[in-house]
Image 1 (cartoon, rainbow, N blue to C red):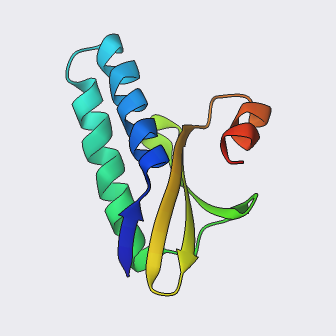
Image 2 (image 1 turned 30 degrees about the horizontal axis):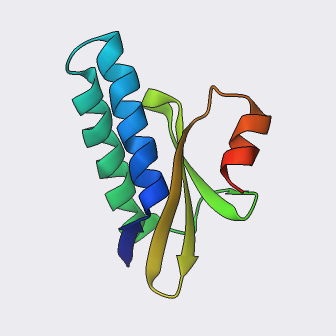
Length: 96
């Protein structure tokens, strides 16, 4: 399957990078590398993850992050990359 990261999800990755980079230099880069590898893995695992709202959610436990995606035909569209430590109401609002 082909994996497409939508603009919104790219902005989420950038926000996550800066959050972790402020915590400790270098951690932001590690965050992005880890999340990109998990996103790439969706090319073989898409559709097996629990559905939340109208998306599948792949959990990345290392960073308490959810990758929200939809599968259409042979393409995976990554719609959002969100911190699961945030309020459930905030997450639902981001997924609208």
